Length: 189
Image 1 (cartoon, rainbow, N blue to C red):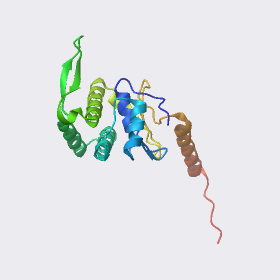
Image 2: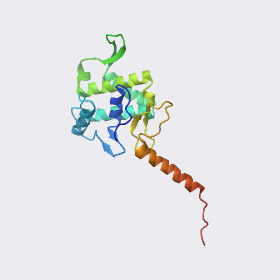
Image 3: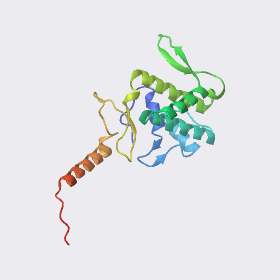
Image 4: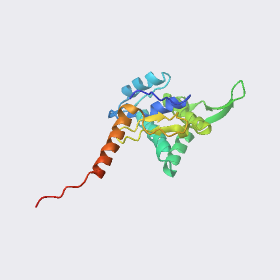
């Protein structure tokens, strides 16, 4: 899928991280280190993972952040809190006085994975504060689940794109209505 509904600001990077598990095409860009680094280089060149353990941690970050978006709960919060503990952030103010989050330097946070984790957590935090996080959606087509940004005025979008997902779902609904309204033929004995 091509991201035709980008999220604002840094949340767009998070959206790409979540879509690194491309369910529509059956492709998990985090299946090996080289593939994930190629994927990350296309969306944000300064992010990468170093080895297999980073790859596992990346999957935990991605899948837990996706779960936070779709099905938040205590287990998800616990895992995210553990990631935040391992990769601490601090509040800082820019030259205009606007607050933001910055990673605490030193140790594990300075690893490529640490920078990526902090970037995702800070963007999610900012997105929640601005209300943009609530506008991220998963396509309702069960075999797609692409994460997109709902920029519609009333926040009622259901599919990542009209073609193919919206068209497929509308056709399925139409055929289901036809099937319900068709008279049932009696079986011949």
